[in-house]
Length: 190
Image (cartoon, rainbow, N blue to C red; front, side, top):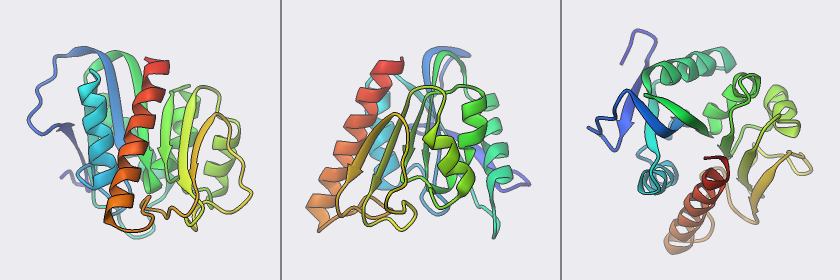
């Protein structure tokens, strides 16, 4: 972990990607939801299976971490990942605070349970300049009812901020559904 509490890791761990790859996916996790938490783990695994090279941020965000902290982490993972012909950003929760920076770069993105209570994130995702997939649920307090986003959406009735709904089997199945939807989206951009 760096001095700022941020580092990056290859996924799966130990993957030694060459200096240049055809397709890379950069992952920005949630505050306490790392790449090895179920939703991100299955999504990253599905992308790797589909030929993407995955690099993820690991962090220990300080109390009150916001857009500046997340943008710095986003810039770090961009630098440390192999260069690529196509880049896809996958961000969950706190990681979605990178939306304005990603929009400036016109980077295709999959936003998992975005923080739509943040006015800048909500504004950015309502007019995102390139392809995006926005995934969330009706029981997520960070996606206020009536908040509109542009692009493709996967809005799951009854799903909360962790994309859990019902019991174990239903939630696990929902995570697989999200992973498959992200791969479908990734095929459109890369």
